[in-house]
Each structure stands twice: as structure tokens, then as C-alpha cells.
Length: 130
Image (tube, rainbow, N blue to C red):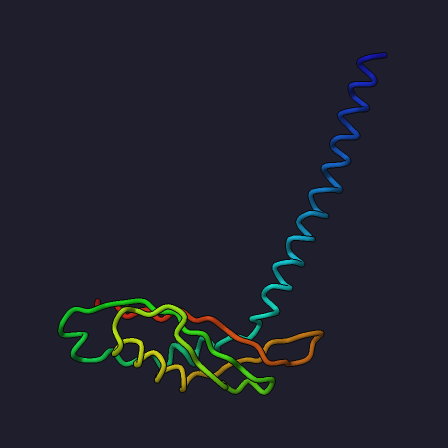
């Protein structure tokens, strides 16, 4: 009898895990998607790759490199409405080049319940020499 109870107990634990873990993962995924919905907008990566920032020549010659993050506000029509630097590269010239390039990129509005809405997107911009 104790052996049967132990097996039953193991089965119950496995069943609870089988139900609980997917439920927890679903809850986490929902929370992440809700958080992402606050950002939600996107940059068309092809437009970013076709219109990269122009490396300022003085920084290039001086060997200055850097990474910055910009945040772009996008309206429901996919138009850029504002751009801010949320983490500077440390070089005003590199930061300015990234801001200028972002004006040439194409953006995709966020979606909420399948409808386009305003949102933001955070984009890393890296200046490095080959």
C-alpha cells in the first residue's frame, strides 16, 4: 500500500507540474507582450540597413567608436513624431549622425487589438571601424 500511495503521489506531482508550468509560462508571455505593447512600434530593418548613419569623418580618423540607443516615437500611421537619445555614445557627433539617419528610416506602428496605434521603439546604433 505505501508503494502505491508513493506512485500516486508522484503522478499527482507530475500532473501539477504539467499544468502549472505551461500556465506560468503563458502568464509570463502575456506579461512580456503587455510590456512590449507599451513600446510596440518597430523600425523596418531593411530601411535601417539601406540608410545607415554616416560615420563623421573627424571621429573616424580619430578612431572614436561608440554605441548609443535612440527611442523613436511613432504615430498610428507609422510616421516618426519624435526621437530622443536614451543612452549616448559619448560623442555628440556620433549621436547627431544617428539622429539624422533615423529620420530616413521607415517605421511600423504598434498594434493593439489588431489596430495600429502610436508607440515607441528603442534602437541601438553602433559606430565601429573595420
